[in-house]
Image (cartoon, rainbow, N blue to C red; front, side):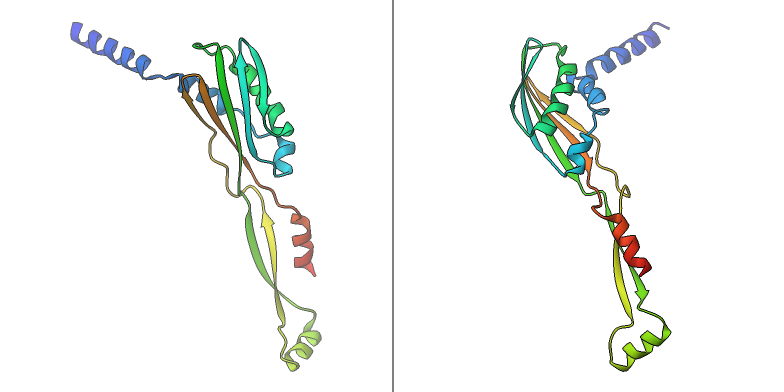
Length: 170
């Protein structure tokens, strides 16, 4: 009975020691989202921040991305360890759209007969775009002492999905 209890105790201690500071950050970063306006405008890049005694200072980065990074960094301030942290947010857009193609007939039967007489094509290919078919990868975090790097992934969007649908009806 004592050996079973000691085995369970060793297992609990092993699980507690297996958790790293990255694990706590990962659970928080998993809920962080790409700024919607920046995603729509296809803005991506790095935002460099300095966290010092609860104060967040933007060192560089696009303003649309920096505001989101500052909000997220303020929640990271109570991280145990050093008081000064260098945090870099890498905002990356991943292609999540799928280009589709559809072959449609040109004109009516009479128009197609005239096109065939002149050796022209009677069909055309119409291209479209579908959003949300693929999903961006999960957000990532890497911490090495006072340096934290965070990757926030967003998806690309179709610019004119309605135009492709209208072209298919013509």
